[in-house]
Amino acid sequence: MYLLNHVFMSKVERVESELRKLSQAELRQVREWLDNIIEDELEFTSEFEHSIQQAERDMAEGNAARVREPDAP
Image (cartoon, rainbow, N blue to C red; front, side, top):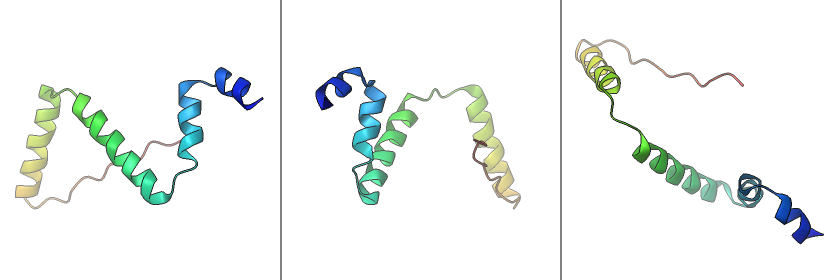
């Protein structure tokens, strides 16, 4: 029965199932690895460069850093 269920699960469902078995430390390692993969695939756009320059100006002027709030569920 397990094999049958495994065949019908999507790749994401199988990964989620395996992730549930990991410790908090192992999950943090996976998160860091995923963050690195996602970051490597980001495109360096002029808009992104502008936001970096604005943040640098803000810091130089002593303005408080903007805090990114997580998206609501």
